[in-house]
Image (cartoon, rainbow, N blue to C red; front, side, top):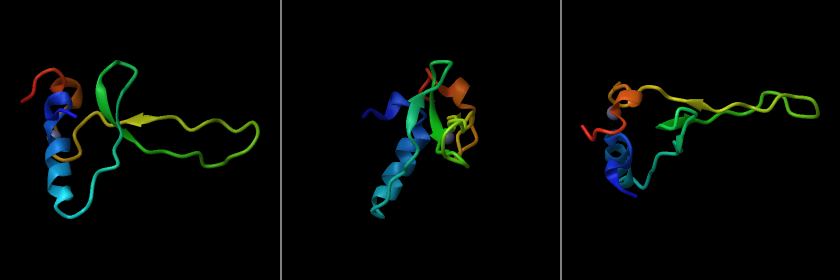
Length: 77
Ligand SMILES: [Zn+2]
């Protein structure tokens, strides 16, 4: 996995956490607008027949530095 593949903070934080035998569990996926964004893990409140499926949520801003991820995609800065 390349560090420039997505917003740099995730790679940096993952590298720091690795020293403590830890890693992030943010899945980085393509959202509907075809941009790579960290997916917020959600779950259904009620399960069973007829209940709506849980929807996926995406972070618009980096949780570490607050940069807009929509804008950050494409440039490695
Ligand atoms: Zn960031």
